Length: 291
Image 1 (cartoon, rainbow, N blue to C red):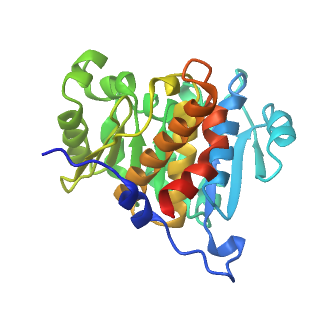
Image 2 (image 1 turned 45 degrees about the vertical axis):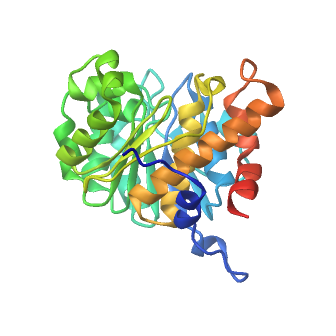
């Protein structure tokens, strides 16, 4: 019998926020995202992370993206990084990022990262060297599609968030084949590589290496637009930084993301829904689902 996420899934993953809380006690997220032409992905992930209660957000992004991001997202600390000629984060930044990850509660890699030799080396180095839980999304998954065994080198819990196309590249299947057996595909991958696997799409599947599987009932077709996945990645990484239980926080983030999307669709309609509208309705989703 298929198990589904619900309000209890979200409530169980949320940590207490005492009256004497401060930014240092609410988690630090290091976000390694963005490239020239893909500033929006890093920004949406960062804004979504902040709306989910992270104490401190550090955005590590290419020098060329920094002025854009700093003018749009004031609440973040920034690590402007050296970049390749095409505007991707250079692999020479790996030692710096590994040092920063030592003081982070979670690490997000991939939103708008781009795909090149430098980002491949960077992603592989962060997977094997980061001293905190990781979330891999989008181009971080494309960077390891030819060698998913690198996931086994992670020293801390790892969550991946592929859409069917990315899942297909990781498994050697077509997107249609992935969608024909969504729960089993996610579970097989989770157990083979020891990572929590969030297979996005209608009825997003969250699978754990220990065999637990949850299917999400929230969300709508208005969320089928570029950027929605970046929002989910930021939400998930934020919750993971506050509660280092990868399966529970992943399933909770998926449920909350869908609920915020449903609320946004009620306000704007499915056809006109934007990923940034989902971010705007995260507070309302928290209010309606945790009271």
